[in-house]
Length: 294
Image 1: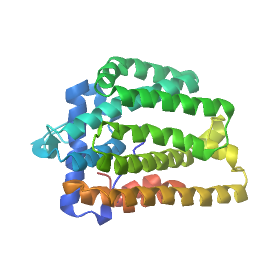
Image 2: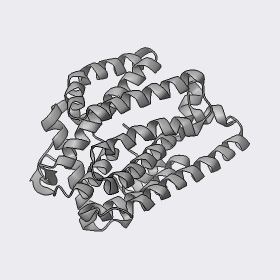
Image 3: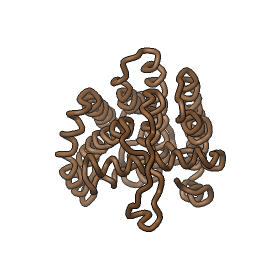
Image 4: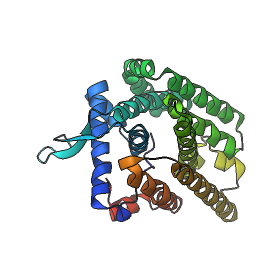
């Protein structure tokens, strides 16, 4: 999907780094097991974060083994397996990706549109399986993207309305939790992380959308073609991203996240602000090479 939600590696202890990477590798293998080899292409950091959250609040345990894969054929890597949180994250990944591809197929033109339709067709059977596991989440994703589509057709200037539509999609992932004292903080975390992701992606796509004429609420709301307007937009976006990250971090303090606590807090307190700055400054690639990727 997006891949912005990742830890700030310089501040991770070695065991925390290994924990995140083992969950990431575990999600990759879980996608393969549940949905086939080709499904690994939809692996992303955002859903690894969701897996860590769910593993923490459900205390489902993290059995670890060592496995080889195409990315590490000679040296086995630590890998979480037989984990319900990973199953959940894999199902969410398929559902989100399928509807995002459907949305792209409706919005894009030419080769991009054809590629989106082909990819959606590839995922269709897998989507049916995933939506069978998580029907309420699948419905929430469909409704949320339909709302985004309506805002796009209206050329709506409200950044909050567009971000809210995507944030409610992410919040719906907490609906499977039955205990209210766990579900409500989880909804807050996922809502504000979802809001943060949408706005970060909107800024990241700003220049491309200006060239193609694609809908972007930042373009409609701000005069981003002028230097002064771009600066105003940047300050406004920086502030709202910081507020969302802080709200999500505050909600995480209400939960006992067990072994996931350090990684989740690193992401919310440091990873999100660092990534936001990298995206807004246009140094995303440099940041990845400088600080390393998981």
